[in-house]
Amino acid sequence: MTGSHAALEARIAEWRGYVGKRPAVAGTDVDELESHLRDRIEALQAGGLDDDEAFLVAVKRMGALDAVSREFAVEHSERLWKQLVLHDADAPGADGAGRGRTLPAIAAATAAALAVALVTALGLGLDSAADPTFLIRNFALLVLPCLSGYFAWRGRVRPGILVVPALGMLAAAVILNLPVVTDDDTLLGLVALHVPVVLWLLVGVVFANGDWRSGRARMDYLRFTGEWLVYLVLLVLGGGALVLLTGGVFGAIGLDASEALLQWVVPSGGAAAIVVAAWLVEAKQSVIENIAPVLTKVFTPLMTTMLAALVVAAIASGNPLESERELLALFDAVLIVVLALLLYAFSAREPLAPAGWFDRLQLGMVVLALMVDVFVLVAMVGRIGVWGASPLKIASLGLNLLLAVNLARSAWLQLRFVRGRAGFAALEDWQTAYLPAYAAWAALVAIAFPVVFG
Amino acid sequence: MRIGKDLVAAAATPMVLGILAEGESYGYAILARVSELSGGDLEWSDGMLYPLLHRLERQGHIVSSWGAAPNGRPRKHYRLQPSGADALAEARAQWAVVHRALERAWHGRDGGAELAIGGLA
Image (cartoon, rainbow over all chains, first blue to last red; front, side, top):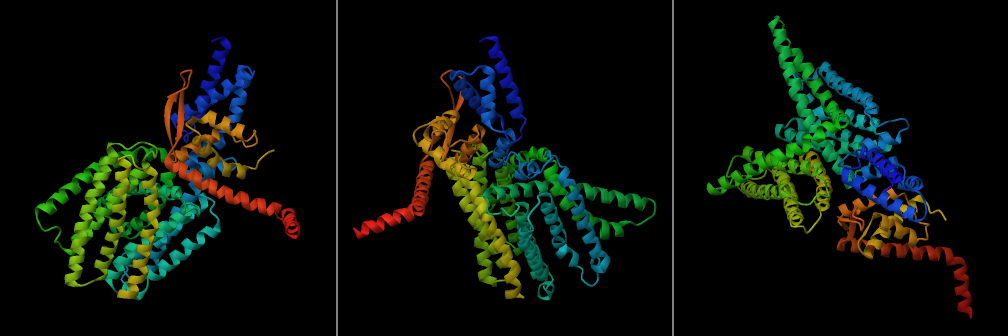
């Protein structure tokens, strides 16, 4: 090697460092691109170019780094979400920092807090004598339009995309306040639990900028949801501690602030926290990226152990889950947590990584959950046979079937993946393709149950 | 001749699958082959090839493995999988339909006249 080749090596190393700074381009991709650059340089040198010329031509042919790293971001959105690169990079003068999102976030959080405060001011708050459940059952309807507004603003979403979510929210507002629903506590509980599921998926349409058919966009939304939940829990814990402290301090100087805190601060603060959590997910993304895989790695083994103990106990006691109605509904919650853990792990996983011990553990968790689900299904069908159908039983049964189908297919795909028969993409595709089923079932409960049972 | 961006994007996937159907290959060699097959008319930025390859790998159409170039440098090789061969067959069928339809549309007028004359003769 001569001195001039050393200069070429230095320029390649410099170029490599420059490419490596792009968050969407991972380490092995940089290796691959460097390998390509060297191939190209060698071919050009063989054609008679000197080191400098070959380097310049090779770099030029590699393409504009912005465009290339954007393509990498589209393909590897688990490394960096689409909207971070695409929306901001498309905007002239934007540097990808959170600047374009802060103002919409503040506005949307304020709007959500004010909407809740307005309801309280109108006498429909938590202590309302006329309609004590008004604020709770309409809470999602007050907050989620503000969250959608935030997404629409920061993503420059076309107004046409907002039509369907807006119509859905209007329909939800009507259903949640029909006398036939509000007069029946069980029905109200069911509708109030299912409507937010539909609304959350409608918010996803705005989040995805109308691109809700794309599996990648759906995965992005799942990932967003998981991390939003983590931030929301953190904010609620911190906010709760602050409220307790404030109440205590005012109590110490002889003033009773609990009324003001519970009626005004807690509902409005909660509403604002929902929007702020969404903003934090995107603004502080690199912080949470390190937490998501850790959380799933901690809780997946724990959940698997818990399910195994449950299955053993149920079989040993000989009479699986011959239990009370509320306990059966509790198992639905267990299965939802299993599915959430699975989705959360998927969303944080490098799709190209081969199957490892964690994937086998997940397979174990899904199979155990499926066994529990079958026990619960048998018990539920038995209860409906003996005691007859009720809205709560039908809703639990439907949710159970919905989860059973997903878990069965997940177990099958996970088995194929662990045995190297299929790619990880099949698992992802199945979960993202299944999302509309939740929306359909939740919408069915919200719309059909008041008609049938009201 | 400059080929439009959209057409290049549409042709890239079947092109790459077709080249990998000839045998295992790596990034630079794939681009060199594209250039050779198209007489240099079908070209895109070198860097754009890799997100495309990664997408095909995620979809299970191809698999990659790191090997070494003859001079010892590390090099990532890509190999076609059965599902990639299926995708290629599907793409070929689609392109054939498009090709046939375009042929008919463009040669319809003069070709139609020839047919009419042929019919008279």
